[in-house]
Length: 591
Image 1 (cartoon, helix red, strand yellow):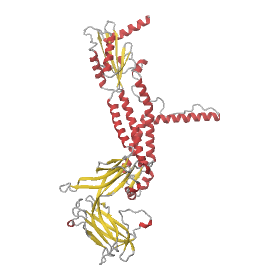
Image 2 (cartoon, helix red, strand yellow):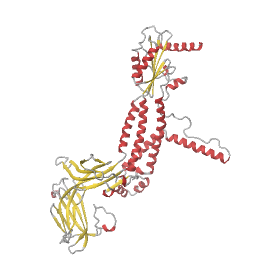
Image 3 (spheres, rainbow, N blue to C red):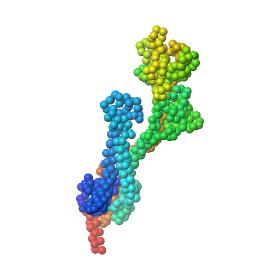
Image 4 (cartoon, rainbow, N blue to C red):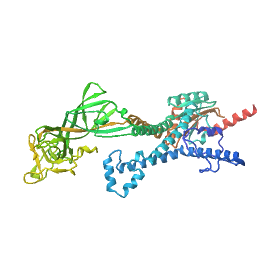
């Protein structure tokens, strides 16, 4: 058996058969020869108006074709993909209005110089800006323009057959040869059977067998690019039809998926209220326990909301538990648990003894131990003299108060020593002006704080069951405490497609990287000395170190049916092959 060798590259003397051996190993378009920048596409301009119009049309069509070729080249697609990745950086560094409008507005006020500039550049809404959309659309167009012709070309390759063996197999990167006593027809039949077992596609010839393997390499390449298009479409649909809102629910209360029920709501530009799928749920109970000792003191150990939900307008009630990172999925939406706190339950009576308010006051945490800011507005209130008035309460709810620390802040998130610390105001709440107000903020610009008998600001720390008596005869009773939970209801229509595209892209990349496209030819001809000369040669899609080893393995397997001649004085196999070819050519000439 001869050795596997890698001879120098072939010169320009190869004939058409040799050139065809390496053709169509890839669906990548060939680089265009000539000028990178076009010249005049219109050619010679004929005189007159018609000549000018024809020349202008040729110029316009030529430039359009040139631009399309550039846009759909793989080089430009990679550049656009890189630009798109760079364009997402500002969206991560600069607060986005669509994510947190309050934070974005605060950033503008804190940076008076950069704020207006960033507004003009669209950096507060990167993903809906003109420049981001332009890159996005160009990349999508480029990928489509790249994939369609490559797909048709790949389909043509699948329908085609491996090309015939080159005239001189010694020119190929991997080559081996030996002589055998087996008949050429037997060698070729054994070679074809062997190659089929190794999953090569084979094509018999007059004195050779052509085979090819590794089509999945190009398939993986195409799958990767198609997966990128799927990801782009999924991202676009997610941005255009998405909806996301938040709702704070006190234990025992519920939520229905309608716009008026949300505390805060954001949606894509093509989203409509009709896209909200009907469902509802109730917060039955919230369970939270915390670590009490060690360096992890105050860290949640149990943090879950027990809910009853209904799919559709009148679906049956079902129980579920919502945890952090374990959302409730219903009617195409996901319900995430994102926060927890306490709602002091109070009863407010006016100066006439009538109930002006009764219920829980959802309070917003201001630290990790759930010290909360508490605001209560009572718009329908009468003094002890019967005069109409409005009052407001402002203060803090402290789950665990420890006066030994010298602060009024909670020392633990659990309800170990709860206190409701409030001060009261009376006057105009501004609720009759028609301007929307934040329920968690109290505007005291048109109100006066109650004073005690000594003229000091009126304030009191209440335990559960305590009553605050106002100077005008009204009262506030601290009835109890209910937990509340904040939920985020999210509808992202493109998530499933994005996941499928990402998985397909990974498989496509793996296929294009690890699968080698290669061709193997086996030739068997009768030598001048009467023995059969067997030649094996291979050609790979790229420089692969495995091709010589694979060819050697095929040669060893084939020698079971074509054992090499062991005579020491045998002539060189390559010379025998050349002699056989010359003899065949002479016989053909004489004929």
